[in-house]
Image 1 (cartoon, rainbow, N blue to C red):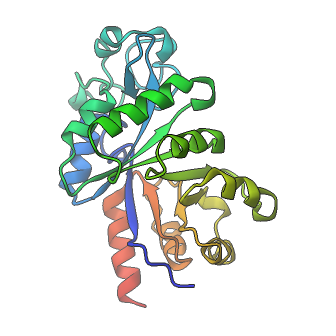
Image 2: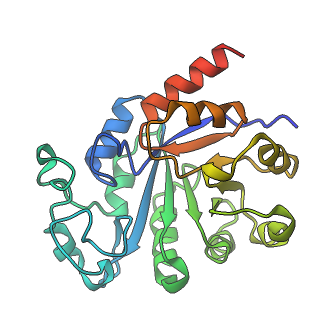
Length: 251
């Protein structure tokens, strides 16, 4: 079947191949590159603020240590989340979800991946409220590895676009759970995608968004485009844009 979706080139944690991930610098640079879709991860602080960070700890991407949930927002804001990547980004701070949303203009969409939502239902509630209060449901998509989390998002407001992330995908086994969750998009890891899988998912009425390709691997990007995925997350969205346009020009 023919899918009526525009190809989604999604800057993974911003333009994270060039800037420290999940920072305003990374999001701003992705927009400077002309990218219209950004992606970020969110977690909860111990004083109930939603902050943009991937890992459960601050160890890897800041000059601090310990679990995110064991920090309050003020403590989080004291951390340097740029120097680990390059000294030119020294002083970058972990943004809140509100700060990222306030930065978006009318032409930019955001994918918010809820981390560890099953163990943090209050995080789901806070994310839903923040997006809803700003009337951004039509521009913010929610993703998760948990169908339970995505089901809760849909239950709160069916207008939310939700995307399920899969490291492995067995359509025969997973289809009932996928349908009952009400998700809109299926997102398999790039390593399990081939043309047959894309065709099967399209036949079920879902677009396919690949995830997990962090390297600037043009060969793999081209393969995924030729498989007719509907988009993918990438740390190098400028390279993906070039590969996509070249592939389509040669069709």
